[in-house]
Image (cartoon, rainbow, N blue to C red):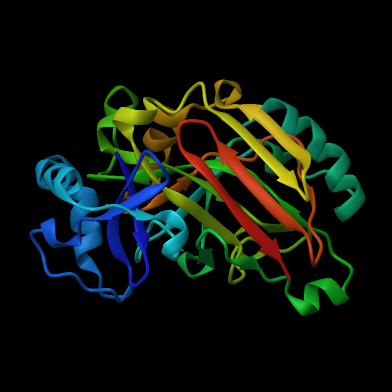
Length: 289
């Protein structure tokens, strides 16, 4: 199933033929469109297996609307946190030696080891939105890079989740850009500016995507391929990321985990158009201003 949020943060199921069916009325909780108080969304992530039959009936009986007639929103509301994996593709680790020498004047070995860090939930925007380059960063001449990533959406959540049970705690997957300022500043600050976490276009539930392996990620900028990778190349796969992250902090329903940047990171500039596509999930366009 492909779950989308659209218009006034209504819940939709995306169906073949580029259509969406409004299934908000099938929810067992009141619909609150305010992302700050929309507990129904986190409850849906936690209790999806229980609610799914009603959503399937509503999708089967409902009337689809063309996707072009609705405004897709980011497929997440009020996550308690966004976590992101660092240094999770071998070729990206290699290229970062050159990137750091150019942007920092030195190589920071600790940044080239796998780990997780936090991004601000307020950095999230949806498909079709713009990445806004911070004026002070642009004036300082610092590079701002694109990082196209598979994103995990947590379902039931938990603490100290074992790797062999980790997928049971995953609702599904979406596509995301971890936009990054290259500077000596703290990693979380450099990646948390407003609009620096575009995600979308919807969530493909785990039964459609599997364990997150075998997915092709392609990012183009004005039609030119910038990044192209398969998630089989992840150094730590999805289950391992969930297990490791949950050993540090409790994962809550609706939290997002970015799985790491593939090789090919590079600067984005005002006026460019980015298109991110992940097989078995979907694609989204993002502008840069």
